[in-house]
Image (cartoon, rainbow, N blue to C red; front, top):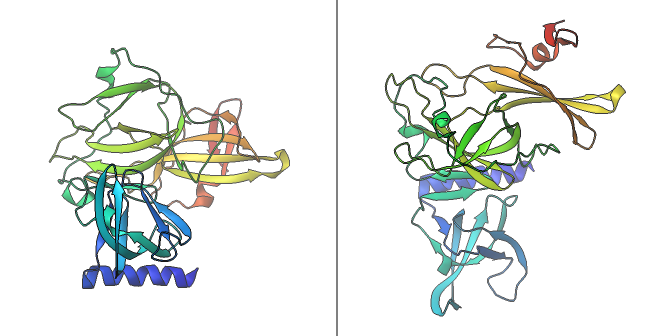
Length: 307
């Protein structure tokens, strides 16, 4: 494992210093990676369309394939697959390009050519969703993903907090396209964040592209992106303590978590009970796990107190 990490770090270093080629898959169905530069060799993994990969070597072995009636010429290239445990293999280069697409992928993350942390403008951030004005539209309900917790595939949570919110097909503020209404808590995966801050603009201009049940949506509401999991041994259950990073003025999600709620599951991660957002505020920038876990839940008052 240590050797794989060192190999990846070295490859990233050489790529940045010596200009190793980053290329992007253009095949709609993706590219098969093989253990040798031959169509008869073993398949070892798959690169989806628009995936970024690193070219290690040009083999000089030419190949011509036919795709949708067109001849595609290229050569076998030796590549490094970041998303496949550091595996190295060979692909047909006719379906790779050096031109970065508008959206490209690496693992479960998506990256956009025109939006990044570095092109944001300094300003003040305040959570204030603009989705409410779209609630009068006749939109379908979006089914939540919450029956069984899957922290590897969906590590975060989106909590409407007893209200309805609109999710969108895009994030263009001057031409938003609403696609559905979410009414209850759901697991999500964030694959991109878009910063649209303007100087002293107090509206929420930070958007996330999220995945719910395999479908992508955009939202300007904050995600619950902090969690701790503990086993309740005597009950044969687990509890997930979930919070939302607040952020500071001009900075997004770089502060202590607040707005906590709890999810109780059995040992197979099936959800047994969900609480509402608790009337509890940590208010401690440097709190550690033990500070959050050193709490006592009072069922009579539905409040949580420090032990």
